[in-house]
Image 1 (cartoon, rainbow, N blue to C red):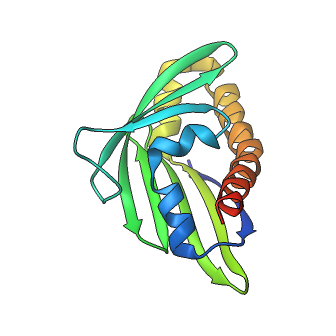
Image 2: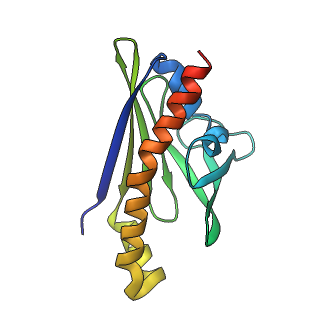
Length: 155
């Protein structure tokens, strides 16, 4: 079983450091991620490797919370976290380009996560995995567009 991977990119007319600061503030994720409604740091934590946070997600048929841990926090270059229950990795890289920053959002759903889905959903696991993959594929461009709009409006 291989990891499932997706990514999407956009250019934003702000510096890599500016965009990193926005994305690494997980308390703002509910502003731009379609499924995410809120995130909050563990008491005293912030955007550093090893920091923990909780996210609340909503779909029309359910609401759930996830626990995540920051695995990359390199200001102006990369911010990433792993959802602890499944090992799903969400990452953002920030590359300087003329006039701003190319931001790439990536999603990786590892074999560990697929096994969790198999255990949780049984025969329905392949459909559930396909749904999550499609949600990531559709959500990433929307997320990046919302980050771009917020970043450029603040400029």
